[in-house]
Length: 376
Image (cartoon, rainbow, N blue to C red; front, side):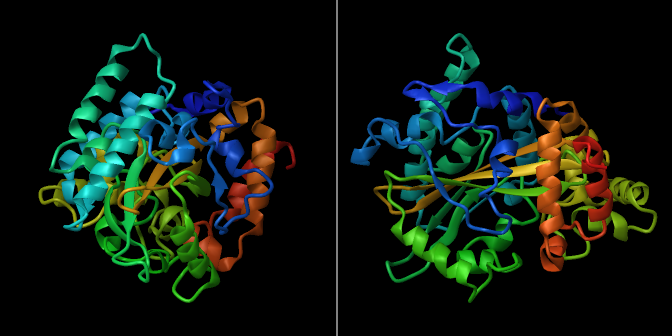
C-alpha cells in the first residue's frame, strides 16, 4: 500500500537555510554506535536563528528540524484521515482545561511547517500551511487539526504544579507502536512506560525523565530514536500483552501468519460496526489493507520534545519510518545497516525481547540480517 523507503532514504540529502543539516536518515541515526537500546538517548536539535529569545515561533520551529516532510506525506495523511473516520476516540483524546496549551502547540507546528523545506512550486503544500494556520486558531481541537496536517503524531505533556510530574493531557495518535492513547491519557511518564523494561515506576530512568522534563528549556528542544522490528509494513502496530505482540503474536497463532490473517478477516466482518475500544488488527486491515502482508520491517520512531514557553507544556512529535528487509538489501549501505541492527537485536535480554515481541523470531531475523550483511 505504501512505499516510502526511498523517500526516507533521501531525507539525508537535504540541507537547511543556515547550512548543511545533520544526517537525517532515521535508520542510520538509530543505528549510530552511541544509541543504546532502552536508553533515554536525548540529543539537542539545531536551534533556529531566533530560538535564543524563546519568543519567536519561527525560531522555536528549529529551522524545520521539528518536522520531516517527504514524498510519503499525501499517502500517510490519507491513512490518518481514514483512522480518524473509523475510530475517532482512538486517534484523539484530551483532558479539559489544557486548550490554551493545545493552541500553543498548534502554533509551533504551523511555524515548523513554514520552516520545513517544502517545494515552493507545490501549491498543495502552501494550501496546507495556510489551512493549518487558520485551524490553529480554532477553539475546538487545534492539536488534532495540526496532527492531521503532519506525518508526525502529536502528544502534549503538562503538569498540575511545579512539584507534580508531567502527565499526558492530550494527543493525536494515528500510528501507535504497541500502545493505546485512551488507556494512557492522564498518566505520568512512569506509568505510561510501566511495560518498558527499566522505565517503570521507581526505576532510575523514570526519575531521570522527570528531571529532564522539568529542566527542558524552550530554546533547547531535543530528539531521540527508538526501534523495533515489525512483522509487516503497517504504520499502526496495535497494543498486545507480552507473548502476543509483533512476531510473538504470529508465532502464538494456531497456524502462524496464515491463521492470523484469517483471524483478521473474521474480526473485520464482525467487529467493525461499533468503533473499537483500542486499535485492533481488524481496524488496521480495514484502513491499511495490504500493509499487513507478513514481511519483516526495521521500524524507527523519531521523537522530538519541545517545551512551550507560555504554558510550560511539552510537545512530543512522533514520526514512524519503516524499512523492509528487502529494501534494506537494495540500499548501498544495506550491509552496514543489517550488521548494526543484528548486533542490537543480539544484545537484547529476555525482558527486552518480550517487550518488542521478538522472542520467537530472533534467530530467524538474525539469519535474515546476516544474509543481507554478508555475515551468514
